Length: 361
Image (cartoon, rainbow, N blue to C red; front, side, top):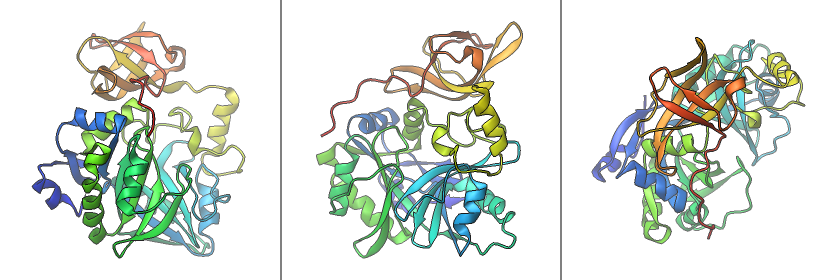
């Protein structure tokens, strides 16, 4: 299990730690609902040490990925990135990855509990290719929220260039090499700063020094979960896994339909040409004050039509919500469902229509 280099410091500041996707990181600093609100209205700072990275290099590294993953890697130039999945022959998701093109290499970023699986899966396909895979000892601090950009600029003393999702660049802060990445994990503006273990505390401390100006709160994974559920962002182990194809999870941003063959491509293309999938990830707005439990199912005339994958009481929405896979004939906003436990819920489109956000500064 990965342990954040900042955990001793976090505990000294009153944080409660917990395991999250193969890493020990802060679960909360103060109140998870307040942390959620900070991101939705201003800015939040997260320890993303639960994300793990590895390097692909060698003459054939891009060619290998191009024939394996679901998105187009070949078109990337240094400073660009993309989201992709590695599928099995049945089109099911083995791992999901963010891939960042650098000079002569590609950096892969995934959950800490998926890195070994990703490395093992990729190594199976290296036969005559000149490709090296190298785990990286890099950690990340995430700046998320409607004021995240300004907070990051003040923290690093830089002016950010115009960036699109997964764009990135290398820089230096206080003598530590860093990489700045644009990536949202909450549905708001999002950036990550990658550095080595020694660089984490100077960057975290500098960001916290800007907290009063940007109404920033340090945030933990409990708030992150409510934020990503509100935004309808699927995560591996909950919504994603080896029983799910990308189209069921709505991962259109992870798929190129023009790049040609890759593992599982035939299944994905068949589902697209059919015009629908049998199951679809949707939102649920729960009636009453009690949230649904993960794994709860709804049945109609003895037939299972829904299963809950993630659930929370939404601070932004003010009531219990959930993510669930629904049979396609029930995957329509406004549909009413009665769960086997007795709970009732209304189907909602994703992301959830949480309270309108203030204008960006």
